Image (cartoon, rainbow, N blue to C red; front, side, top):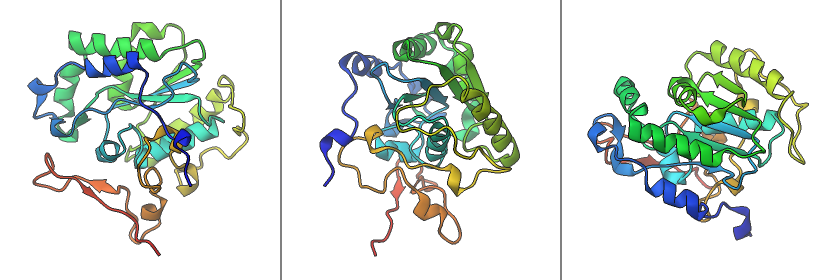
Length: 261
């Protein structure tokens, strides 16, 4: 039986108030999947994060899980954190609180640096920054831009890496492999963490994924959420348990569960 304590609780009140004050995206209603609402974080908001991961935006799986970086891309990020010996001491945030429609990413750039959004996001990054923080990892162009425009990062080392969903397999593996070598010299492993495991090969493989910790997820989700290995092992492989069907992708999600045997 799962104990409630294994799961993530609600965010601390000061974070919850800040999340609730996210600036409006309605002017960009054709740029984002607005109807499903915002998603803000995954990981530690208590100041214990040694690595702060910044991604671009939450996806469809994140809407179901109520936490960011939970789907296929998130499980790749979890594998990276595992290679750094991090079991709990990390935090994942986004450049955008809402899911960005990929074909509209250029319009999203206009919102990224709007004064109200810039101020809100930088304050969030500042709130999440703590003495324990040893590195920031920005995944993809939007995250890189967000971090570049965050004065509060100070002298904390920033790693600009390809997004985990990058279609350039060689670029992804090369960038992440080099980062692991350097990050292992500056990030202190958690108790129970292992920094002596294999680094990335020529491309990412199933061994480079890791399930999302239950400590990152709210109580009540099915136990398969955060581990899509059953889909990746299917024939043909699939990479998302939650999809947006066209033409009604703005209002419909399809969530697929594994068949119990």
